[in-house]
Image 1: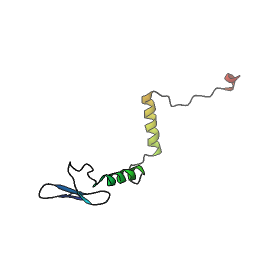
Image 2: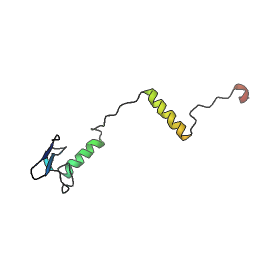
Image 3: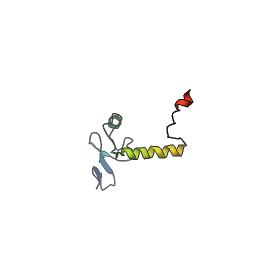
Image 4: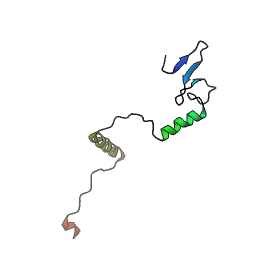
Amino acid sequence: MLRGVFLYKDKSMKVKCPTCKKEVEFTPQNKYRPFCSERCSILDLGAWAEEKYRVPVESQSDSENDRVNENEDERSGIDATPPESPSNDELN
């Protein structure tokens, strides 16, 4: 049994609404599934928009970021080396 999922004898599946924890049938007829209502669905969407939920991401070290940027420059044909500055003779 999955956490918060209940399978009954009549093969109906009930889940707990992620927002209010109310038990609700998980069927095609419930257009807000896995939520119990439009209100709970919108509250959850708002929480994502406000960044209350976050998907964990492993951070890359600076050297890995540099390597990724260099590879992207090579693929795009961009020369990432800075241009040489003109000498004093060239400026006069």
